[in-house]
Image (tube, rainbow, N blue to C red; front, side, top):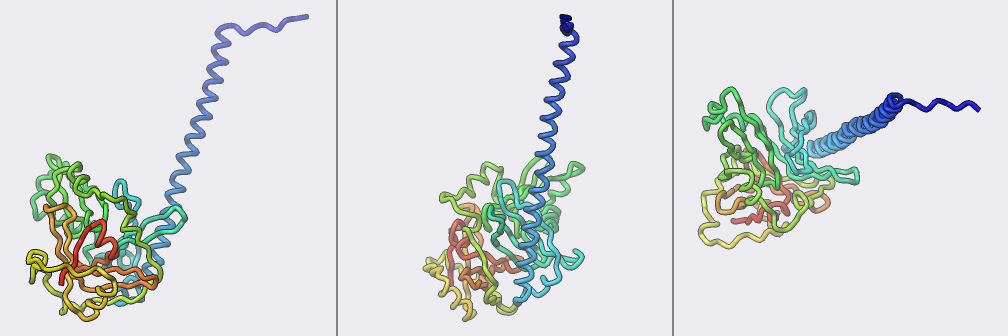
Length: 310
């Protein structure tokens, strides 16, 4: 019986090489499939958030102050590293002109999304025009030179929201809404200052059902929150009970919100100029901060640890 010739060493090496290449090609194909699937998942999340933003825009546009949102368009962008939130900036039709307002949205694992804070006015949260204006006024834009700068969003809660602006020879931090310089030197100090002792969901787990009653003070009725420094005079804080807050605002009585989210390094004192009570009971207070900034009551009390004064 004739024996089949055994492969020579060189032939064996060639066969092993072919087998190895086949395995590597298989792994590469599997990796390519995984990478290709990633954009699809991101696209699905973006589609969910776009639909959610459109639903809130449509619902809110029927309320006083939000009428211009009816024909607006949405620009979606991630809210910052380590944040599962998205910023939806509401732009005029065909994106021509100044912004109309914004929404902060969170995508949930069950295919739904939640509404955090939101606001009215041209200077939105993380407004790049306001940022550039602040950098120009402070002389930082000139210092940036040809190398330019890089701005990174950070959002822990409504009053721990900031731009981290990385310049060629220094890093500065500016408030995300006012673009005011913050007393923060680096990311380590930011993390320490904004650490929340009790783990909470973003915006305190705030959810929203159907829009309910919205009341806003007229421009002539707004006031300066520093006309009486109640928090320094030893006045007793106003109880943050929803019914009492609503009753005071309906009577057009003054109410000031004060918080120190960065400890004694930074104090915010803002006029409360209205409210939005949703049909499911959620209460959002409108704060006068370069436009109306609607923040859920539970987010104003914790984790911001703010207080209300008459």
